[in-house]
Amino acid sequence: MKTTNATPLKFWCDIIGHKYVVSKEVTSHVKEYTCKCCKKQLTTNSNGNLTELTPKFKEINSLLEEIYIRRTLRHKAKKLSAPMY
Ligand SMILES: [Zn+2]
Image 1: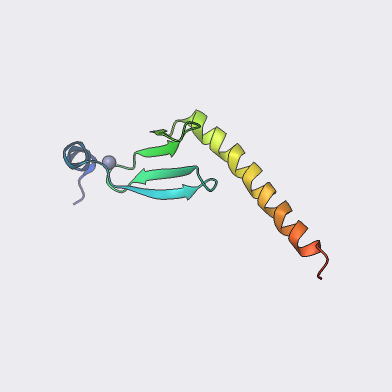
Image 2 (image 1 turned 60 degrees about the vertical axis):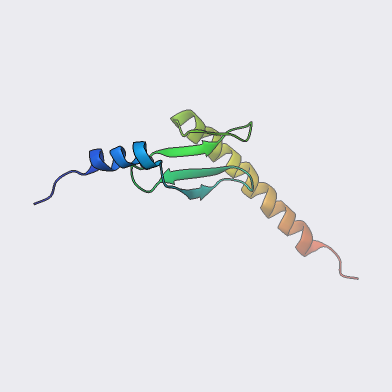
């Protein structure tokens, strides 16, 4: 017998607060957080504050991530091709 426990967990979140864990590191200063209890998601916005992870923010984050990865890869490639003295 399985009952849905989403409501009591949400209830706990309201009382003791959400238990956020980093679910994704988008860039070195933009991260996505997920509440371990109710799965509510937050993200760092452009002001450095935490805000609800809406589909719009997900889109922004995936773009940011792409740019960040590309920049990191280019940086690594530069390092590798640099002449050794
Ligand atoms: Zn929660």
